[in-house]
Length: 98
Image (cartoon, rainbow, N blue to C red; front, side, top):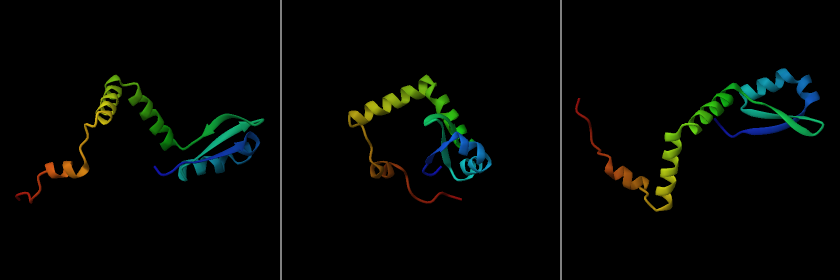
């Protein structure tokens, strides 16, 4: 998905323009924060983004996934890195037989 645009709208406007807001959220990758008396109370976002959020939450609840992130951070902090050029030099090149 591309860059997110977040716009704040009043509950009155959200009620008046609900169809337009859900179309924008679903097709144009926009988020809307709905405010009541100046306080944010709800969000309108597209189904694709909602599914991405659910997938991310599932990953964050996976202990093995979190361990792999922690390990990667430790490797980065200790300088255990491989540059793209180094990685590319380790990949065999050449034509495959047919």
